[in-house]
Structure formats: C-alpha cells, structure tokens
Image (tube, rainbow, N blue to C red; front, side, top):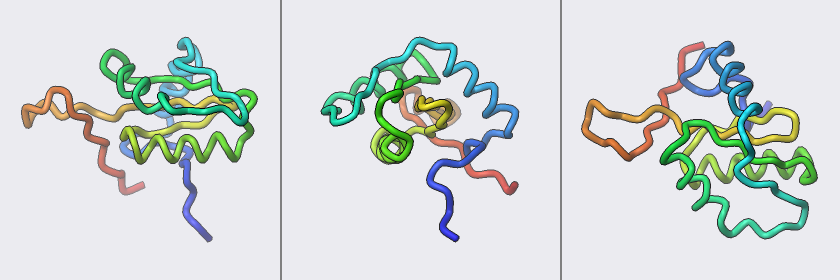
Length: 116
C-alpha cells in the first residue's frame, strides 16, 4: 500500500483539532475559486500573502474534481509550505506553527509528526 497523500488528521494535530480546523476553514471566506482548466500562476503568492494575517486559508475547488484538488493540495504543501486538509471539494490550508522561541517571527515551521 502506498501512503496517503492527504491524511485525515494533520501532522502535529489530533483528529479533534483537525476537525475544528476544518470547520474554521469551511466557515471562512474562500481566498480563490479554482476552475477546471484554469491557470493558477498566482495561487502560491496569494496563499503566502494570506498566511501573513490568517493561519487557515480556504480554496474553493467546487468545479475542479477530487483528484485534481488533491494534486493542487500536494503541490501547495511542497511550495508554500503548509498542511492541506481536503473537505467537500475545498482545500483548507493550515500554515503550521510559528517558531517564536528561536526568534523567527515570520518563518513557518510545520509541526513534527506525532507518534500516533
């Protein structure tokens, strides 16, 4: 079996925390609405800019399709960096935790995977 590209619970969060994060993301206004056969040249820049003020960002992928939605989420995970959570044809992106102890106020550090 291959490992899942998008997990049910985000790394560093419990299932309940991930569920609460999904609800926050689904109740927020979508940053962008993605369409099938669209050009996404500014998605990474807009997500990085939104992470300056928000810790959860939602992308509306209603007309994209589930497999393409997963591919976009995995690409954003690698390029931004962030943790994608897929729910109801929406990509909810969590920026991770900010490492303030080491003095990196603007850098994003993803949480370490738990031993679950």
